[in-house]
Image 1 (cartoon, rainbow, N blue to C red):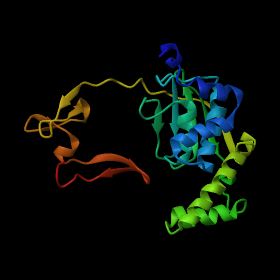
Image 2: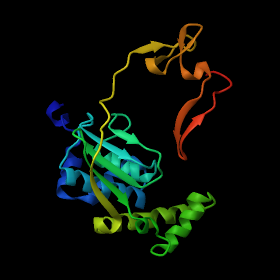
Image 3: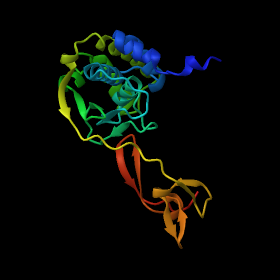
Image 4: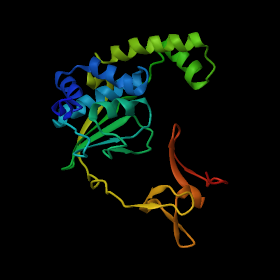
Amino acid sequence: MDVRDLENPRQEIEKAVVDGDLQRLLRLSGMLHGHYCPGSALGVKAAVWSMKELGVKSTGMEEVIAIVETNSCFADGVQLVTGCSLGNNALIYRDYGRTALTLARRTGEAVRIAARPDALSMEEREPEAMALFKKVVKERQGTVEDDKRLRHLWIGISFKMLDMPDEALFNMTRLKIDVPSYARIFTSVKCSICGESIMEPRARLIDGKPACVQCSRQEYYQLAGDGMSVVAPCKTAK
């Protein structure tokens, strides 16, 4: 194996951004997201526009920060194109429920791109797809054939959206923001109850000894499909 071939794992994505190859990027996004849909297509387009507007690349080392305001399909398109993810600490999630992305340099120079309301309302443009979306996704009552038909329609709609002008889908604003500091690397400690390793600032003290949140039976934050919430402590430890 030639290590030089592995030094830039994002080179295919970077080339597609420079070339404006949105179809390639949406295909790659589909590998992460699991299917094609208008939301991920919007994420791809918003991310490409913001990266070109700022003239940035990302190595996943926090030199570029992406702030998303929704945990929907849009966020996966953003993560794929920008290289900013929860795992590399370059993605910030704000539970605003808005289809919007702010991409920023370390200097604070940033671009915010937000989906226009008419870009998200497709009942008139795509009545069959939206009726199936309601039945299959919202109500969870669709048949296997309904699901198959919706996925087929989503493919056509998603790739068609790539050809729409950015200005028809988004509002773009240039701004200056306060960028968070680089993520700190914390010391790990051992939970005195379950024995697992935990990040020190997440540890709780029980009888003067460190314990993880679960073993200490305290409330914790959770990001799930319906957004951020505080979860009550479990009754039994793992």
